[in-house]
Image (tube, rainbow, N blue to C red; front, side):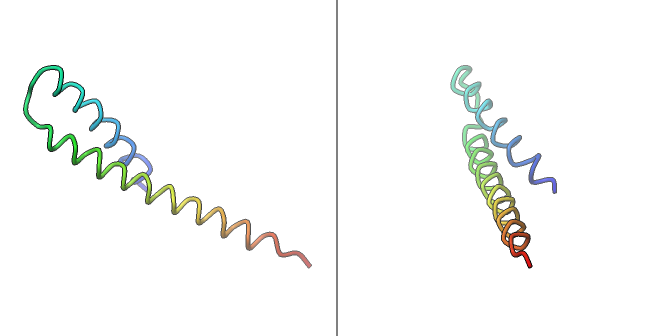
Length: 65
């Protein structure tokens, strides 16, 4: 359930962190990149699960008498 929130949030924060790191020259570029990767994977997995769930629901309800 929290994947719907934390995946996109991690992706957005990772992107904004990398922008700030490039602008200010701070450290932590690898961690920001990891946040982008993990957030992208989490968002893709949960998005796929939602699509599969919707497809299954439509397939089950489309069979009529």
